[in-house]
Amino acid sequence: MKKIIISILLLIFSLGIGYQFLDLDIFHQVTAEDLRLKGKVIVLDPGHGGGDHGAQGKAHGTIEKDLNLKVAMNIKKELEKRTDAKVILTRDTDASLLPKIDQKKELQARVDVAKKNHANLYVSIHHDAFTDPSVKGITTHYAPLRLEDRKLAKYVQQAIFNQKIDTNDRGVQGSDYLVLRENSIPAILLELGFISNESDEVRMNSKEFQTKSASGIVDGIIQYLSR
Ligand SMILES: [Zn+2]
Image 1 (cartoon, rainbow, N blue to C red):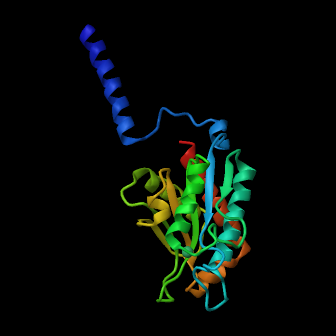
Image 2 (tube, rainbow, N blue to C red; image 1 turned 45 degrees about the horizontal axis):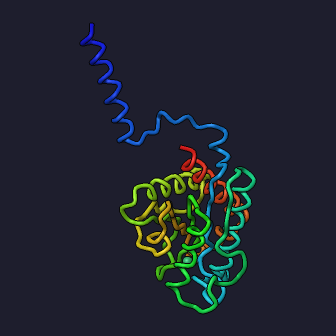
Image 3 (spheres, rainbow, N blue to C red; image 1 turned 135 degrees about the vertical axis):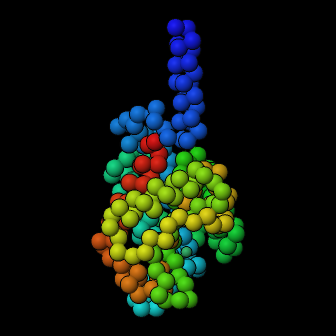
């Protein structure tokens, strides 16, 4: 009898360790409080700004810095509507954070916004461009080898495509970007389509896509932070 009890206890113990190892989070009950993200701080970073325009569209004249800001503001609004998280934008006007254009210092200043505000999550918003105009789709980047960041990237990328978006799902990708590498919290960089592809450029400017993608991105953030 004693032996049976001991082996049952051992089994329960090893299952617990196993689940922890697999990170299945089965013992965590998601509460309404979790879903509201009370006490969480989320930094949204609209890429480029001011003298740095980012990519520019040939077919419809889209300027990346402007679209990044618009999309980030949509996400902020959606997050504030659905959660109690504190949402901070690295910029809320068409201006760089630093007066002089110095790419490296500018990007570090954006990471410092997260540090200063003790943020839990960092999401940088961009739109892609490539020499081959047939290349299109959405990619979520994370710092290579960071499993937490990769997990966040997967949640968000999946949630965007759950909204039935009509472009290529380019998946998640480990990429060595300063804003990802220098962040000590889970950080991702979204490329929400190719400005250099005509159908992507039309889509990214549409109200329908902007509503769907903001909703998907917020779903992904809530799912990740509520596990
Ligand atoms: Zn960009």
